[in-house]
Length: 455
Image (cartoon, rainbow, N blue to C red):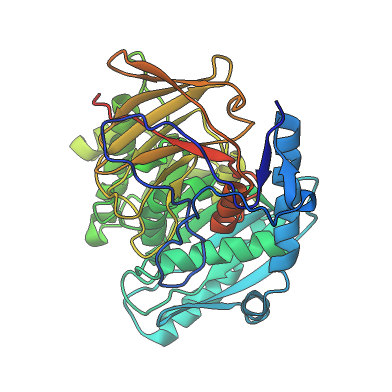
């Protein structure tokens, strides 16, 4: 039977747990405004609607076409938004009292998939405005000459504080920046990279786990983790670089220690007794202090330590000579926007960001505790919940690239439970996921609630 979905129609889904139903609200709009996420209207049909107001979503091919066409229509409309035009022209955005300025340079050709994007964070931090401005200017050249094709962006920290790149208001501004880039430039949202040095390295540590699904890979140089939880980097490769003798704040020790942290996470969240995820590389530069070479456009080999655990214990390690160019590291990776498996620690979220989603999962902003580990199998049309200890409802968002949403979807849990759910594609839901992320590779047609499950 052909299904016709009107613009007012939303999703039908079966609740999968004993938790209280979470209502029918869809993902919030990704605008940097202090506001609550708008509720999605109840499913209705209006006798005034005409055939022209309707769209058929009765097959995977029709749904794919609807996603693509809707994105382009909304993108063209968004290009006319006066606020976005002003932000793009002035290269400045505001959230509350915080202002984020940025520089932008286009290098080379876009290629068939669009330009990769490199966002670079300057050093400085808790110092004077003049020092931070000079560091920002320096960063506008720092990684530039290692890029052959791409859009190179350097953001100015929103305040002259130690956490200059990750003030609470910074996160919705990064999301606004990515949205404006997607709307106004030909970018490849699967090749967005984050790099930073010193205070910028601090920023990479903090930003990545809160926006891990935005980046294909990241590079942290000469920064300090400040105890950051990197659980959300299951699908996001990271390079850590520091000088062996960069002893201020124990940056050197912390960089080496986080090599072990990431390896431990890989073991903890692996499958079948095998480590998995958390791809990382640590370059501890032999004999170097706060200045390390992570941007050599000639790709000269640098000497780095190879046994970081041994170095932490004895101060001794063998070395190797290798290319430590940060751009080369991140360029080796392309984001999978619909990864087969996700690990989401809900305690690591950007508080002031209105975004509710992480890859293909969604939880309201007041869900801030618990771990969700979930995977899907397109061949068997199954979603498997290994763990869901969130303190509120968590939803799996789906589209035709992940599963056959025109058949029942089987949901299994680690305790052996199994049930089926059905999803009705919705044009309203498609629009909501576009508005939240402005990412043509992450547009979803519906959702269903995940059951609770302990590992």
